[in-house]
Length: 228
Ligand SMILES: *Cc1c(COP(=O)(O)O)cnc(C)c1O
Image (cartoon, rainbow, N blue to C red; front, side, top):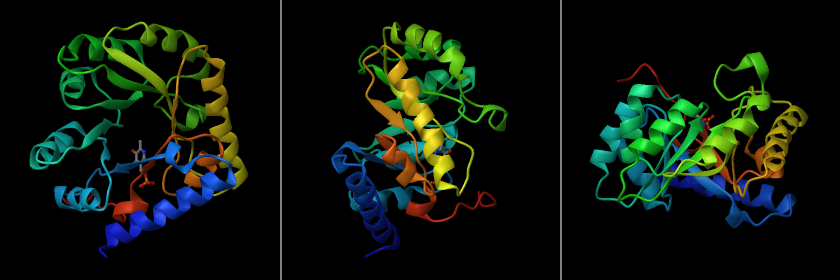
C-alpha cells in the first residue's frame, strides 16, 4: 500500500471512531483532501485509494492540477482567500467554495456562475477566533450575510466553514467548534454543512457536527512551501 493509501485508511479509522463516539453516522462525514502544494500525481494516488473531493487554496495552482487530472471525475472545492479578480475562474471551475466571507464576492460568484452548471455550493467562512484571524465573517454580521447569499440565484448556501485558532487543548477545540455549530443552528435557513476540522483537530470537529473535515498533512504529509 502507498503512503497516501495507508494515510487514508488511518484517517478513515479516526473518522469512524470519532463518529461512533459522537453517535453519528460515519457516512455523514466527508473527507476533503486538501492538496495545496502537492503535485497532481499525489491527487491521482488519493483518487485511486477512493477519494473524490479535493480542496485547493491557490487558484493558478488549482487550475493547473485540474488540467492535468481532467481524465478523472473529481469534485473541486475552493478553500482559500478570494480576491475579486479571481471570482470568474472560481465560478467556472469549482463545485464548492468554502471561504466566502463577504457579499461582494458572493454576488460576483453568482453572476459569473455559468448557466449550464448547477448552482455553486457555498459555505460562509466565519471567524470564531476574534483578532487571531483576519479571514472570516464576524459572528454578529453572519445573519445578514447568510440571508443575502441565500437569495442569490446561482449559489446554493450550504452552511459554515471555520478555521479556529490552532490549539492542542481538546476542550478549547470543542468549544470553538460548538460556537460554529450554534451559529449554524441560529440561522433560520435549511443548511446542512459544517466544514470544520483539520489534521490535528478532526475528532473535536466531528464531535461538534462537522460534515466535511478538510485534511492536508495527515493525508499527503507535511507541506514544503519552498518547492516550486
Ligand atoms: C491547509 C488547509 C487545511 C489542511 O490543514 P492540515 O492541517 O494540513 O490538515 C484545511 N483547511 C484550510 C482552509 C487550509 O488552508
